[in-house]
Structure formats: C-alpha cells, structure tokens
Length: 330
Image 1: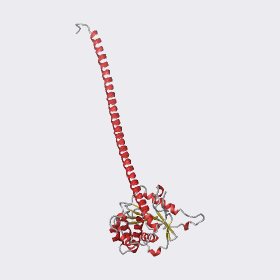
Image 2: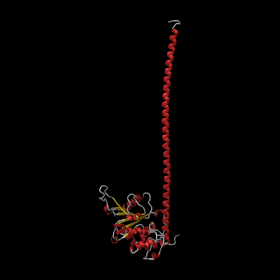
Image 3: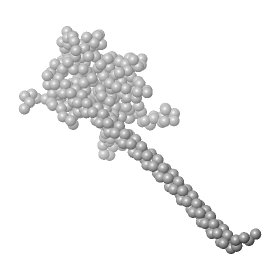
Image 4: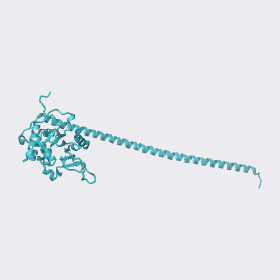
C-alpha cells in the first residue's frame, strides 16, 4: 500500500538549488511524464510555453487550465500512457499539447482523432457557432514529412486550389520539430520558441544553465523540473515511462522485423510460385511441341502407308501385266 497521498499538482516553489548542479540531467525534458507534471504543476510555465507556441504575447493569455490532470507520483498504467495535456485556454479555446519523441505508426490519424474528440463537445441545444476552437500542438523529436522539413509547421482546412481560403479557424494542427532548430524563423525566435526547444533537448545541467541564463521564464521552468525530478516518486514514474517507451519501441521494431521476414518469405514464395508457373508453362509448351511433332509423324506415317499401298497396287498391276504376256512374243 502507498504511504503517501498522490497529488494532481506538485507544490513547486521558487528555488535556485539547481544552479549549482553539473553533469547529466536525471531525466531529460523530452520525457512526456515530466513534461505533463511540469505543466500541470506550474501554471506560469504553462502560460509562457503556450504563448510561445501560439506566437502570442504572454499578456494575451489570461487563463490556462489543464482539464485532464493525473495523480502525480501514482503508478501509471496502459490507459494513461497517452500523455497529451488538454488545456482550456482563456475560457474560449481548447488546446491539446503533447511531447512526442517516437514516430508512432498512424501518428497523423491518432492526432486527428484526438482533435475530433475535443472538437465534438457541443452541448445539447447549443448553436454550432458556439463550438470552441481546438488546437493540436505536438512537440516532436522527429521529422513528420522528410521531404518537407520544418521547425514549426501549422496545418488548417484550406481550399486546395488557391491555398488561401480557410474553411475554418477552429481546427488547427501544429508540429514542432526538435531536430530542425536550424529552420526556426525570425518569428519563432521572436517568441522564444527556439529557446524552449533547446531547453527540451538539453542533456546536462551545463546546457540548461547556458540556455536559461538571464531568462526569468525559463529559470522558473527549470526550477520546476529540478524540484519534480528531486521527488523520488515522480522520478520513478519518469523512468518507468522511459522504460515503457523503449519497450514499446522495441516491440514495434521487433514486429516490424517479423513483418519484414514474413514479407520476404511471401516474396520468396511468390517468386517460387512464379518459377513453377513458368516451368509449367515451359513443360506445357514442350508437351505442345511434342504433340505437334507426334501429329507430324502420324501424318508422315499415314503418307508413307498410302505410298506403300500405291506401290503395292502398282506392283500387283505390273505382275498381272507380265503374266498376260506369252513367252517368245515379240
């Protein structure tokens, strides 16, 4: 039995205790459990990151509330392994935010499904126009479309002919690519999104201190990360999450290998079947040739038989003719 009371929000305080640390981070900031724990425990960090992601001034975000908090420190199970953070923004829009380090199969469909579920929340009797906008933002440690790499890409329902007429502004998907910080635009840098992403990618305290230097917002976020990872229960769940992801990735890779082996075997069988078909075709063609040759021989035998019959008849006629001629007849 647990000897503690799980909490939704970890009680963070202002602290500079992390500034004397060095070496490798105990948990990387791309850990989605740590990411969720930080955002639901530190509302200022949540607002600051949200403003950066949406390219807004922080003053424009009056409220940001996590609507699906988890019990921090409580053991997570399979049902909680989707670590998206759902946020009600300014009481007027819904934001689905998640950290994604592994390129999952069907990623595009899953993110779209989550958006649709959030969008489909119209109360009975309400007019359709009252539906709140839904924004899906994934911070990914992979390139979604390898032929079109971007640091920060946004997708909307749009006219495919003129690429300008937007069907609605209430359904938006964005992806941040942690691997392509080199493609950050001037606007991305203006709102500090590149700094947030460098912070997420950091692996040592030295990197963290260099990135967060002279930035009050990032300092507070790092302080929260430090306090959360100092808490053994939360650190254990972060590590459990990493192990689960590694195991899930291993299973996916093993399944892919098995699928590849099966595909190769199927290909070999298909090639063997094709070879058998070709051999059968060759045999059939040879049988046809032999049959034609047999037919030719049979026709030749028939011709020879007819010729032999003709010769015999002529010989018989000649013998009869000779028999009628008397000896000594001139």
